[in-house]
Image (tube, rainbow over all chains, first blue to last red; front, side, top):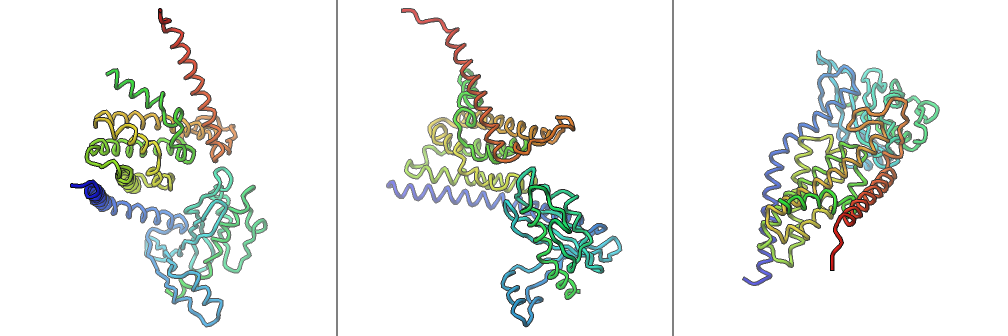
Length: 199
Length: 210
């Protein structure tokens, strides 16, 4: 066997064995990983929707937002193929306690991902948590603090949510604080509208 | 036995990847914000190091020299992906915290370095032991770095409150500059100790007679 045949053969074999063992491990862990993610998501939902014990997912497709005027058409382009997922929280009697959705916005160190809980009757925000962020430890990561997050509770779409006036920002972390505010505000109206249409 | 203890000492101190060779510094600086993350990162790296050293040593006669680097990279990348699946399944919090540094284990020069310098030439068992020693050296280094940064940055070690409540955390220790500062001081300390040891050894050794 000449040298290049040998090289091709050995590399091919190694790659094949590698592929086979990866698919084996993937198959073994896939279910557990999915369960973990689902459990994490549920835990977050229960945190922003006090009283919820069960969750149903409503997939609000882009078609819900189709309207005639140009601005809303642009809105559809922005959110491309990403359907807005609404998580409806149910209490022990199966009654709705509100719904939650995930939104993200750029902060100081990267994307800030928030989950917002909304009361479906009063349309007020009833909970905000930070799912993911890459803000500066010791400064920007204080956006996780309850004292900051709870300032959003009670706000509605029509309420002004201005940094410094309505929401007390975190000292030294204006960009991070603003990122959270934008993330919370961003899809609030869209989510409420989508929720109404879905019900 | 003498050989094994020498190998062990080499990984733990004489050729400690972090403090003596200064390689694999990217995760060293990046994830050591707490003792637990440092330990987790180091153990994940040690797992990949031991497994890939073993396999590379087993295959040293099979892999043609010209394609050895791609072959090593495939082997290392496979173990890295396996450990990332396992972490995601069984330690999801650690997986989230370590983030991008898990896939980056593939390009950690400690692993490729040991494959080139040791596993590709030595018998399997010795390669495994060498990888174990190096992994252990990396582990104590990262855990120490993480502990110091966590202690000064939050007052805790492994999440347990150590310093009194009145202590004001030094935010800088939890952020990237803290990693450089801590590593710098530790390197100075390690060099100091090594110099002392080297001096005392040369002093105690009898002068060669003519």
